[in-house]
Length: 562
Image 1 (cartoon, helix red, strand yellow):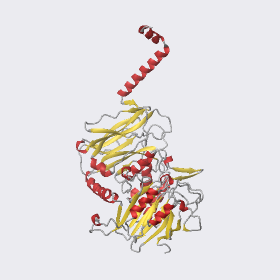
Image 2: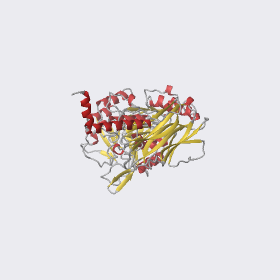
Image 3: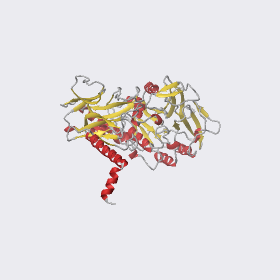
Image 4: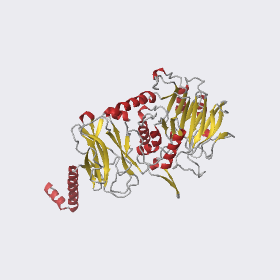
């Protein structure tokens, strides 16, 4: 058969003609969309299908980039948008990969993405002081100059800017896209969170919000100096200094924060706002907290699509009070089928101010889990009248107390973490008895097989499903720890008196702090957390619990029997 006759047969075939028409239509459509800034996107980028990194404020300042424009692009589903054209050859657009309509519950043909233009400080010709997302096409106020970008007929991006810089005005250095309801908070210092949602033309169960990092030139060096002291000295060496005779630690566990407002149990609903109000009030009432140890279940991953938002919401009382803290994982904090969620939570938490966690690149991967730390506490007088410390004079080998935190990943602590405990306690003075150990999931020894003494509530007695060897407790006692305190079991807050190797140790629970956490055995079980107080002058450790109303159940941790 000749080529000519073959082509003739194909032309007369209606199916072939139809396929040719569809192919031509698709090609023309893609070309037209491309001309409008839209390109084909076959795979949507989910929030945590890759490892993410986060910069602390000091790094953002040191990089010296300014936000010079912000736009929202409407993109047909199945396609993605090209970035807007840069305002200058020295500007770059950055796409926030998480779509604004992450929680849509009504049909829409479009996805919406935020783009942020950044320009190196010396090359900037405009200095943005505010970004607002309003339904009106009229400028929000008369301050400085405004420019607008239309997204829909009811949504405009308004950019407030100056053309001549000064030293006092805070300029926008970064933009974060966050998600939440009316209880969403971002209490990081220098961040301006807009509680008004970005109103998209579809129904959403959780709304998008913008948070702006605004810093003036005059504030740059004080921020960098403070951050350098913490990051390069205290955090890098895992140490805390105090001049006070007492060192108070708050252990928070099982907050179970989500991006929605809370959780309902039948007709009864519990709200995250109650959790945040309780923690804020109780921490302020307790006063003089030197360190917060969070022993897991900070968030409920099943109620979270955007991890950063949930973490900021959960930590908002601690960040607002500027209390140093360290976090370790529980079983509801991350998706066990997606390890990226765990890595990204750690990377994000470690970027927050006053946080002793270190990002995944600094984790000891020879050990089980990611959040294994030993924080050394030094009681030292300040070197001068301005209360500054001369860290070079610290006797780093002889701390006055240690706070060890482990990651009970998959409900287990193992031999690699026992080895870690031996390493960090090997050279300590045997007379230094201020040693506390924290993690999330209880050891099997938290279910004593004989009669035992305790102070507090011990309601949950079901079998503990953990592969942890019971001998781990012997290792902890051998390393000199006076108390092991955990979370996980919401309605237990007791300290159990345990004796091994003729040595005493207390096995303690924090109790549940989160209103949205499940409590079945005692319906009115009030939310609480545990306090440990190390008294250097009297050489003892005391503990008690704290509700919104008052402290209760004071007891000696060491020496026992006091």
